[in-house]
Image (cartoon, rainbow, N blue to C red; front, side, top):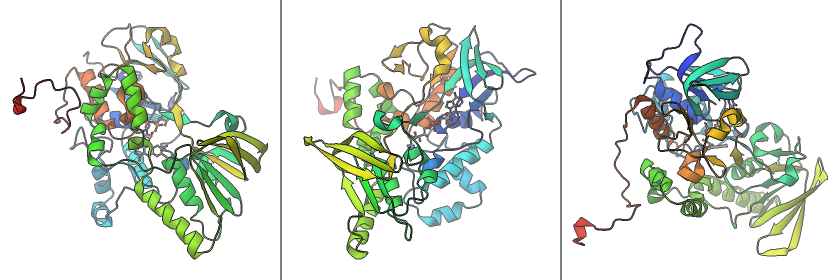
Length: 437
Ligand SMILES: Cc1cc2nc3c(=O)[nH]c(=O)nc-3n(C[C@H](O)[C@H](O)[C@H](O)COP(=O)(O)OP(=O)(O)OC[C@H]3O[C@@H](n4cnc5c(N)ncnc54)[C@H](O)[C@@H]3O)c2cc1C
């Protein structure tokens, strides 16, 4: 690797990152201890944020604290969650708090702390175009920087079904905007659509507003019930590096089948949230006598939306009785219908040179897009290859490991050294211990 340092204007880098969410913040944090790899990370938001519009009271992280930005790859790194707690002088208080799960606000504050302590991040700068002439030219809303390598970590954007998307506004919105837009729904009928963690958190929050309760909260989900996340030990082995590598070598159909079949290991609802919800509904109904406040409609899909702001009518199709539509009225509709990959229009100048697999860029073992350019010039993809790398791709579990793989590629080394899962994922033709030949 050529030992490039930034030039007088600070515009040439070994690695330029696009987006500063947890994925690229992990890469930036791990790169911090490699001063020879000059780097700059560009974020369009003016300040660091992490799903701030969904930070409801009581929200908690769905992974353990060791799955922070750096620890699983570099336990001695200065950007660990424990280092954050220690720097704030509250590591003992944290231990004594005995949280079952880390409050999401606290993890968000940790991420922000990591961003504040890294001078290689620039906020308020949108990347508009990436071109290539032997170096990548990364054009932003403010300037152009040159890079040997680019790391794309632009995450996901909110997604709403077609019938809602055209008429979004103050009374019909994605859960991404929940904190502001659902601030005052006292006395109103609220429909929450979506049976994952975000929908569950919204429903729990709406039912926990003494003195300012909605008139009705109707929770619609396509899934057959409100299902928990599977957080058990062997299932969590899916979220190990060895499984990510195993998965990547399966054929397309097997990968698709796996992701569909195991989706609740990633996208289910925390058991603590489900328990809190059930207990809240019990108390409201049987102790407070608030009959009819919580209406639970899983196993249904919203197939239509009419009416208008403040007086919406949703049409639901029951999965077992598709010929008998249901209608519900709502003053406010909250779509907790998930996210889709953020478009990467800035890669348009290179599009014909980058390999694709369906709607994803085809990546290699180092998360670099396969292309016709020089092998020492790479576009790394973070969190955008679920079809190729599995369910772990979009959550926090493997961000430190994935970042380390990218750094290894930049350094021309390989540092993976953790032992394999207890489970043999691949075929084992001859097991020496059982004497089979
Ligand atoms: C409410 C919520 C809670 C979650 N909780 C968990 C959890 O507990 N555990 C877990 O494992 N996962 C969780 N997730 C999954 C989540 O997707 C990841 O945790 C994480 O946010 C993904 O990080 P990322 O960096 O890939 O993307 P993002 O966090 O989306 O960050 C991408 C960044 O790129 C920026 N960007 C986009 N385009 C450009 C551009 N052209 N130029 C410059 N910047 C750009 C965006 O502004 C954004 O800041 C949660 C998701 C949500 C929505």
